[in-house]
Image (tube, rainbow, N blue to C red):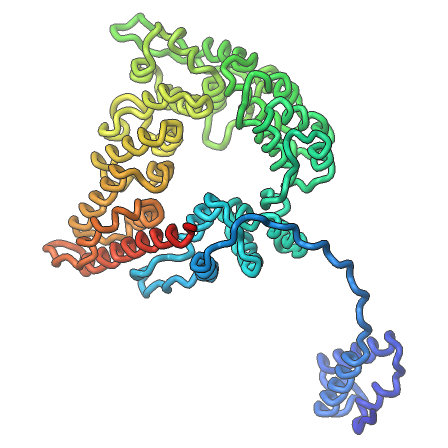
Length: 542
């Protein structure tokens, strides 16, 4: 090839070796950065561009093909039934998130939010044991990468082929650690195959394997964990230990007692928490003895009162049993230590310690020296940890009572955790009565623990409260969280009841300007979403 410019000629005569070519290219870059007027012999800008074009062509034409990489193994089979065609098209649409854009001023419009329906769609598909379409696996993994809330369901739906594909892209490495990805596990009773995968498998596969073996034989699962416990990384030991929560029993106590001496503080704390969930464990007995020395019944006054004397120190034995010595910012040391002792104490300790009273009366007893909130909060944590429904009911109090009055806790966060212990119908009934008495302003956290779809009474209570809020003339934005929950959780069968609310109501005196139109739009979106959810369920049916 012949060049007609001085810059190109200098490149052409520089030789064809890789080092010379790289040097020539760097010379061109330097000239471009400094300017041709500051580089003697570089010629003008046009000559520099000609030289760059020649060099670019040479670099492209002289590219040496890379050696072929090792071909990955074939994707494993996935024998689950294929999606119905309508459901496959719907999944593609949900993954594209083609929801209507928000209008100016933050308005969402009346179209359903497809992105918010994707988790529910995945849950339904997994319930039916359906297979993810191969062509949508990359998009599905991208969605799971962007949204951590989707990962468990998305990886279960992606199945073994999704995990196989994730190994080929570093951006999907979360699939290899965060979940089993539907990988094929050996039969829990196949000891040799289980041991092989336990020693050589990916972390996600090992977690899934431990859970499967634990479900098959709790003792065998614990024994499997013990074989490699001392060589595991601290963060892995923590996750493996956490898997013992399911089917936790007294047989796990010796292993957990050993974990109290673990070199990782988080592992020690988790072991102590698990042991305290076993009321008959030695740790629970030690905690009960400490807590009982701090809490007693004072009968000297006209009314029996609970007296509290918090610990004055956190000794080494307490720390070994999981009591953290340093409180978070804003907490006193003594109250911090007391709370940890009480929450780890078997709840059966307190009726015996406090005069044989039933739980409902214990919770209603006055507590001296403003220790009531601390004691009740610790009892709430103990009830959740020990899954004690009787204590949960007493600490919840009556749903009709104003928060902060009467027996029980006033904290909505604590009430939400206590509700999670109760059976589903009782949980929904309590929240429905709470909403009927107090409206929706404080119900968001409570609704989040109710099972989807909401039971009939709960759904009706939510709709009635939304209608009352609309009639009050305020804007719906302060209820957007509850409205979003209703779109995901309300039973689609309730949509006919909502039809009357989709019309714009007449403007009331004193109402916020245009509030009726905003409410009508919100109810239109709610009805459209409920109908779409019913359609999704129908499309996923065989």
